[in-house]
Length: 587
Image (tube, rainbow, N blue to C red; front, side, top):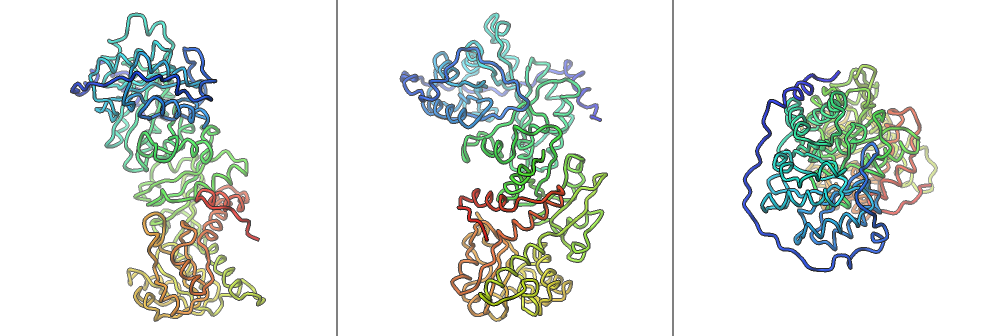
């Protein structure tokens, strides 16, 4: 059931005054006399169509913004957007350095064979335009007269905008008016969001757009609640956009949540708002055009999370299995608060992968624990149980140990050996004491390792893990000096990870040589060959790749989430391609 807040706000809004926009100093804008039509890209020129445009009629429009500074570049971006499969193209004319509304709007609209949103965003609402309001609002009405499918006007300027309408223009036009509100600081309360939505409706919006900066992923629930309320109580088409990395899930699941559209950038680095994915990511990885309210969701929770390749490999396996499901990244600050948020424990969410720094804390939020995960004391997989609670598993340990066993067998060259027993009696040195380290240390113990040595930045945490798994603790300086000898070195920390520490290694090359390691494992898989692995190879050690562990643990997670076998070869291929590397089948 929906909160009555939304309905009460709709009933009360007619009693409240619209907010007043800030005063804007006048700034002159120049015009250009260059021949725009001459620069029209050939493929776009063939798609010229008659005005007016036809509004979009699908469920959730895949939309991109043209933010070029010149008309020539804008026409090129329109071409790219159409070829990339955009359902709607937003023309951000406030980005144009030289602009003549009477001439240029018609050219832009005629160049685009899909519906357009014409937006002339002022600086006081986060846009580029710093001039007077009268010509800005007149330009929007020019777009209406030219047959634009949509125009976007700020709620704060709605009164002046409608007052500036040329006589009879709106009555004659099929253009739909989007009234928008942007909050670049935070997500307002559910009550305030409902009030803003009702203000837009009362002011004359055909479509309501609300964008807000999400500082914590749990606040996405407020935006989702607004969409649900709008659908139940008013049936009003509504666009909701969570800005920032924490709000990205609102964009990736826009179709499931019921947003009229969502935005994707033409390319990385060309985002028109913070946290915006690319058009290609929305279409190819998250399969937004195929989402519906019935789409099931999984995700990876961690902090940081932007570097994770989990969405790439899980989503391709979901598609291969023919499942109506989507896997998303979730920037989580507080795992307890996240798992206490009704949205994320609803039956729409099947489960979560857990990564740094939540693997140990996640244990506290499990109603049930797999016996191995219970013994390890860390989980990397949460599977939803009926009622919204979770069962925790650890797939790190088996994937990491299998990777190391195979590398050790390869080190032994032609010698016949059983990979299941190859670590028996060996000395395993684990760098780190977090969730991944716990999985690897206990996995080594399960395999009969002779000695398990834990080294960590916090010696107390190293001692605690060593005590739990029957190992011993040393300082990082002991390892870095080469004083501690061993058969296998396993790094479970994030040192060496792209992009922040690619030039850093947890153990220097001199120590690798002195310690006599046969195999060196690095849980970091991006870059594929870390500095630690590169220097280990130079020292004659056999590398054990973090990619093998990553794919292996993800494949096991996939089967726990879905009950279906994962497409491991496709998973590996997708990750390598996403990293810009060629795929080679492992025999």
